[in-house]
Length: 114
Length: 114
Image (cartoon, rainbow over all chains, first blue to last red; front, side, top):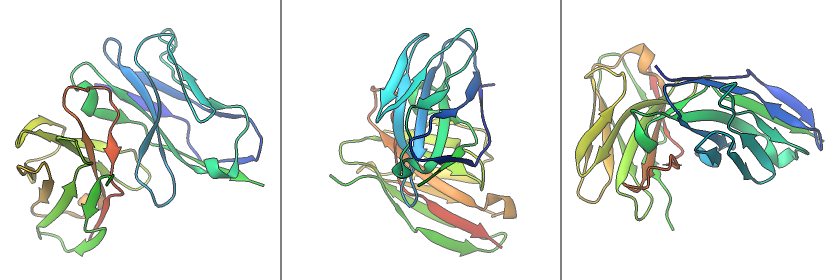
């Protein structure tokens, strides 16, 4: 079945550091890929998405590129801020589930310090 | 614009009891999905409701059941509670036909089973 593997946290960075959170997936066909973020005390919210190979999703300075050849969707940001501290989830929407049935990774907690 | 609201926010039950969790979707949305998020894990899909019927179901036993009302709000019921049912239960809403994978999540109901 579909699965998502993402790097374990917590990841602790200094402000303005470069961020990479790795995500790889297993799925049949060509799933849509997502990054969701959970800020403290808030619900999950969509950060960015990509629906086909080589697509780049971007939002709030974050980027991720759908790499079919490596089945990856790594999240990157060039300069993190304290306000980026949150838990980040990689997810996919496979062929059988449609857009509402998401398969999530275990999440990566990011802590950004001054 | 009200987002997804869930109640109660926290509750404690004992093994064997039954619990009902409630969700009101974001204004304008007609589809509700439920997810279970165990501590340190990513959310897992339980089921989805549209037009008052269960449309998709994840790998959860029949002890987990749900309902959707004409106003699109939804309930999740869990019977014969087990210790392993302790988790954060997330409700997500969307609009049928969009199939974009962009779900709007509530903050969740944290269930503790003793």
